[in-house]
Length: 174
Figure 1 (tube, rainbow, N blue to C red):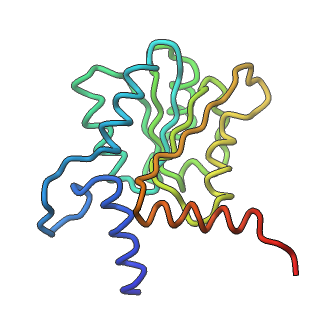
Figure 2 (figure 1 turned 90 degrees about the horizontal axis):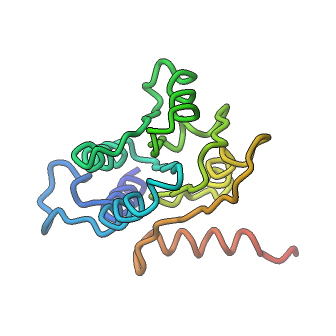
């Protein structure tokens, strides 16, 4: 269990040092968060964007960056009670440009054909889970090309996860 906790902390640090509670970190800057906000600001006028993270605390950090920029968003986690209402707001309100979704809560039952950009903030061990998230846009009624972006910190546990995923995809059969 300690090894898994350690790996999880390493993954959180890749997202933002602010996610590690109770520990002294050298600074709280997050290159990943800054990059994501730049991407959102450059695309918000022409595109609708889905943002997935395994960590609800990361979605909360993103949310705190969107509010002062007056970027309207929908928010879905396992704690969301009125899922259908939240989805309908994103789908039907042209002013809502961003949908923040926890990876687990967004894994089933969502049709988000208004979105054409998908950002995966942190890689998941199982690529099928990531593919399910991206597939929220690929539904009947989708008439736009979809762009999926994985935000990966080079030289970290995230890069190692990506290498592991790639080896699983193309592993030779015995």
